Image (tube, rainbow, N blue to C red; front, side, top):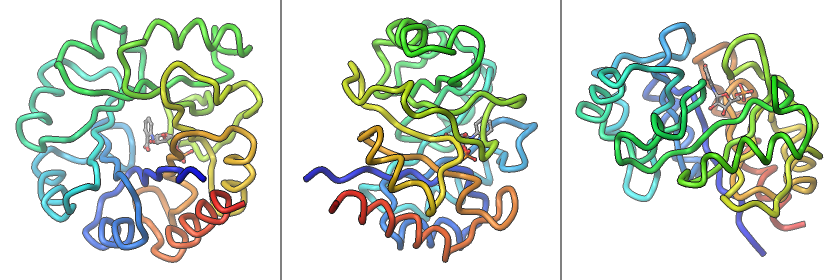
Length: 213
Ligand SMILES: O=C(O)c1ccccc1N[C@@H]1O[C@H](COP(=O)(O)O)[C@@H](O)[C@H]1O
């Protein structure tokens, strides 16, 4: 029986870090994309990072950030993993010599079919994992799901499933895709950037239920 890893993304408050870690999250995500209502300045992110115990990864999320912005976050926050959620090329993802997740916005241009999606994914063979989110007007964190049948669990890189997941659909998503990990933001929130400890606990419980099924 495999254990689906869990990332809770878009944390902005101390109590939300405590809720995610206490519920058993494997990773937390900090957003460095200024238009997002979950965005953090590096100094604030470093304060939250200090609350995260060993063996829980801190993931820094970027959307088309400059090299200087990324380097600043690396210096100040020292994340364990980077998440590139914009239009970054493979070279831009690799440039910092850090492990990274590459996000694919399923249903967007060039990613409407599983074949087209796979072609995009294979350009990022150096990624630690391939993250599948839904296409939306913004770059992510939309709370919208996509057609999970477009993603294969028989993947060359570990699959991270995201996009509109919540306690009510995550078990079905895991049964459908059998991903390595799931990633959630909107589905465990009261409002953008304000997490609910109850929703986080229920989400984790549903993942564990699916793992046991
Ligand atoms: O969370 C954000 O604000 C965000 C902004 C820009 C790009 C990605 C963002 N979050 C990521 O989006 C997906 C799906 O989130 P949701 O659960 O549908 O809200 C997830 O991978 C977040 O890490």
